[in-house]
Length: 293
Image (tube, rainbow, N blue to C red):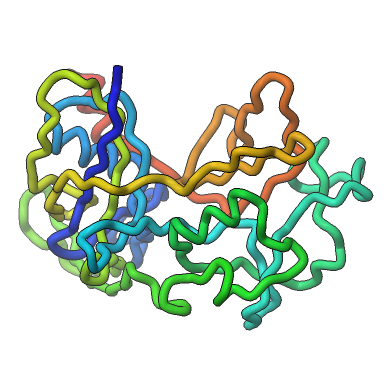
């Protein structure tokens, strides 16, 4: 038997996590930085516990409340779009009348209606309490006010503040390589914000977290603490016409790429897929080390 435990990782400084693209100072002038990956939080959890849990889900960005609890925030769903500059948004939904029309999503998937017009993705974070309405399908797809329905935190203010840094590549030791300057972006969480991980651990054994733990690259550390009173947004209990909405809180990869495997008896009829992201969970150097023991 397993129990569910949440850990909060609070960075002591900035967070820097590179995407999956190869970077070599001197050849490239800028290193691409992304929000922490699932592999980032899984590594931090393993270090904090000193052993492998049964499962790790996250990271989930969360804000400490005035009562000492935590409120999770999830990335804005990819199917929420709006006309450029507008606060009115709509949900992209497959249109039954467009069945059989080929799209770049693949054969057998329905396209959204062409009445959507020119739209753009909506960036921001959705409080977990408001996210329940989205999962339960109680939001009117044809149009809604972002500020009243799925309100991004701070009206466009991101709780992960980017900071530009300039670095200098080094040789095999700590000697600087002349002329090998590069830029990278670090992310600094606002005060009161942390990254949470939901972990399945066995009921028996010592599962006391110990910190600080490495979090991201460049030797950055995060304090770790077990927290309570946190949960995922409530799942719906009814499924009109047998339909169910699946939302991915973190990047994911399946054998078929972006397209998840559907259970027996289910059919995927539409998908909102954001821009592809280069993902890497190991470097060639780590691979060589594993190969040579």
